[in-house]
Image 1 (tube, rainbow, N blue to C red):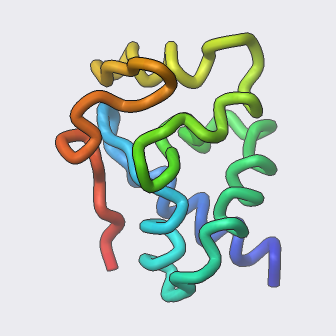
Image 2 (cartoon, rainbow, N blue to C red; image 1 turned 180 degrees about the vertical axis):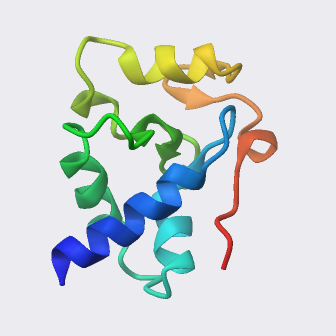
Length: 105
């Protein structure tokens, strides 16, 4: 079940357009498991050995780069987002609502 859930999470994350972000909770809700945001986080943590998953585009519900410590280097998550045109100040996305992408339900 866990592997299947993780793969369902990854399918949604692969759909996040460049320059957009979504949240753990929005992914959980799109999967019909609204209370499983933490499990979405576990899936994202397990995805770091896969180059096909843009994990840097998944942040917490307030736009904080809460998973940044799971990326190699000190600011890789922030750098990847900034390279896509997203401004970050104090580990938080500026104009979060503008950059937020709602997964298709």
